[in-house]
Image 1 (tube, rainbow, N blue to C red):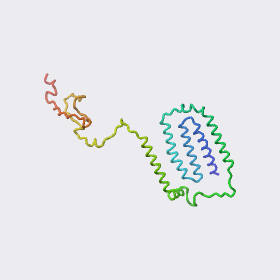
Image 2: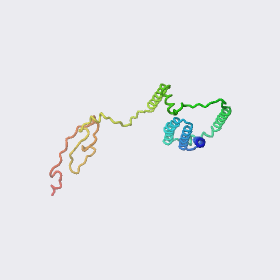
Image 3: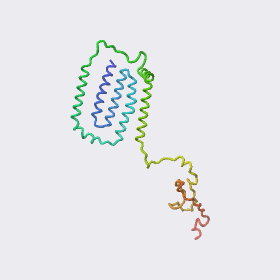
Image 4: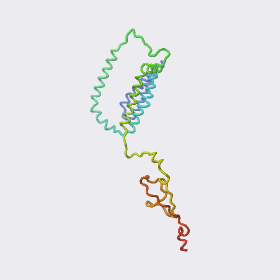
Length: 238
């Protein structure tokens, strides 16, 4: 009784959320309804005893695909009003295709009959969970195909990175070797200045960092600090 009630509850929410995905005007709301539909579909898989498919649906589709859709929709400045301009033009064609598909589904389900001698057989051996049975099947009979599919996905990922990678001349990069080869003389310059004097654009002073070693000018000799009356000329007047 509880399982039947849970089935109809999750199935109803799934159908309503799926309809809201295609009927919502806000694309962010559509993605959120899609996530709700995935969660309810995962709950139906759990009721059917397919816990592996339920976890894959939540981890892969909700955790990766739906979140990716959500971030793409929120980050891209897409003019959805412009995309909806041709909706009324193609609405009759879409409605006709939907009616044909619905009629085909009715004919297919209406002509479906079960054999009187049909016996239900468990998909997994007794005492073995669904996840354990799939693991044994994948990593024993189909291990090479499983590894080949992983290699294909790896090649596709590397290809996508290579195609989208662009060299930008304005990007600043860190040169570790050039930083380690810089000496103290090429990095820091200490000058002795008189009282009240500063370092202008054309004078030497406390500069950090200096230009690149190839563009450095010969270092000027330090200016001796004024002493005595030279530092305070006003004293000589009195």
